[in-house]
Length: 316
Image 1 (tube, rainbow, N blue to C red):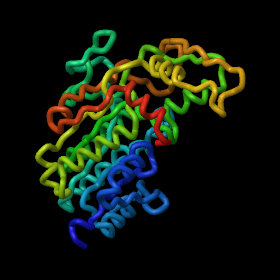
Image 2: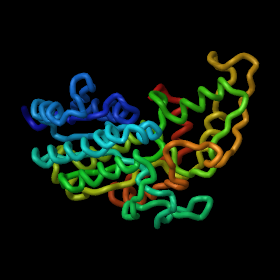
Image 3: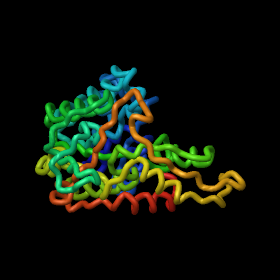
């Protein structure tokens, strides 16, 4: 098999980010995205066997345990998929002399604020890649351990931390708000958690561009030159309440699935304390993306622009 024929192996290819990434890369390079019925991500032997047979030129990991609430009671499986699995991929990438791109999260931070140049409305600074990670919940801890496992194996790697991911498929805040707006007369959404909603397709586009820029021939050396952790998120920041307001305001009351005679529901701002959850969330998880801009000349659109395009595009 020639270098040009060696595929990119993408784990998590049916998820929000993975599916979109596969669709972006596939037109110019072969992509193998095995379903979980073919490769058991919780079984290292199954993963190793697939990599041995597929002989990838690059590994992209978009697979993750993303249910923040359920992870509080299912810590073992969350750790297996979010920590052990990335570490295994990193070891395999290093052994094969290829690179790994791995997605992580803003929830590795505690919400106290970082040292970035961007200020949130309450005066706290956005997080830079070098700020101390101190996750508040099992999901965040599992993702941080995954980052550390990748770094410990030390292949040529890029860890891409993103934020508040949503899209037109799967389970996410956008689809939940749209459903509730059709069902309820009023919505109540927390207004004291601030982050950056980021569209799955925008993440995939940026990842595709990164692959093209750093590895035109998919060589590990090309990524190793700029290896490390980078923040990849939309511009701007907003609370969950502000995001919900923007989603509801954009809904079409004349659409076929809109209840006849129903007006757009008001969106009430509430405090986190008014909506207790099993998993504690960071009050601020805005990511400073300057390193991504300076290293790769990649600038993500503002969150409002991403939302607008998402709502007028096809499902994804």
